[in-house]
Length: 475
Image (cartoon, rainbow, N blue to C red; front, side):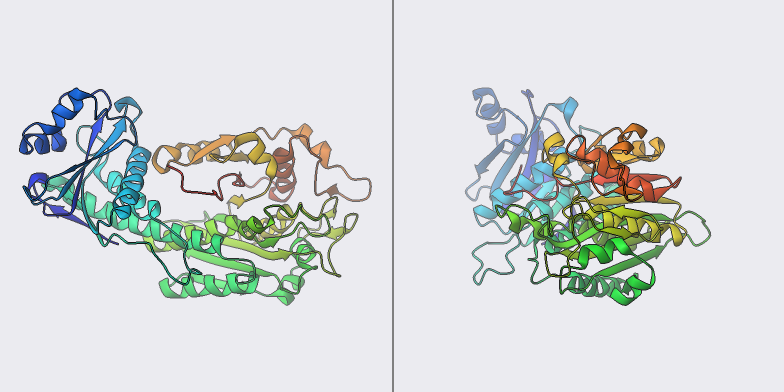
């Protein structure tokens, strides 16, 4: 889909579908919607007064013009209550609208810059949200369908007539394209089946993505992982004929700074649970147990393309957790990269083992803060469902910064406690600690395990188990 900004009066646009909007409870439309209402002879106002258009959030109304104007259809999107309107509303309405227009085989679309008028939001961030909504809202993974029956929208124009807003909107479209494309890469990786995307293939693809944009990328194979003493990664991968990989990406956007952020991703390309075998129902979804890794890879691509003035190390610990003859067993004791000895209480608590080694590697590379991302626990889904990620950490300022971004990104985070007394659940008779703390507070004790490798380094743990995969499109 080609997305661009067009300087024009909204009523003069030639397109198959012109997208405008309306807040809930508005009786007399203003702004661009008011201008179109005037051109249409007050038809929108009459539909409002009759109750056919309410402006409720995500409401879609289509008015056909039947050749009377350059625009063939008017699409009126309900924005909901104005006091609850934000950038994510823009993202949502564009996603819903573009899916609807794709269904009726529209190929050329124009839209006003939702939010940058009466709502008073930043035009650049509105354009980012419009672009993300259009591209991510129409995302489909159809690579393995022999015949695709899905129509595509060819172009989207963002209409603006204010000279002062044109460049910010263009900049926002550019940033939105980068963010959406990077997200699509992450989604594609997460949707690949385990037989197609084992650790070696994930590493090769990441190397390819990185090379195409000049992002530094180093791949460590099994022998190098052994030399580093990464017992967590080696233990998890021992039951599979697919060897593990450590994928390291680095962006030096501020060489004069001593600060370096580490993004650590759990990259289990398929998780059977190992000897502690998972139930067979829905096990196929465990191809997505590398969603944390996919998120880190997508983020590093976006960081490089946006050329952010920060230093970031992306570390992906990738393995396949299988119950082969050499598999790690419950009761085994493994030695992690930082020298800690871990009793394996449950081989299905494998993500924290590979993350422990990835975090220690990050520290040895001089990282001054760490964010790990993982589909770590089913307990996070029990606690928060599929709409929010669990957040833990040892630095409240860093956590607050992360949570504040949800106002722009629309992603929801909920902080869980990580009190010291939870650590006792990890106590082991035979080793420094066990890799599980039992069923109570399962997400928190998983976070406490990871904290053992962090030390005093400022750190955030994101458990994205609930958010990583949805069974169907969600508005």
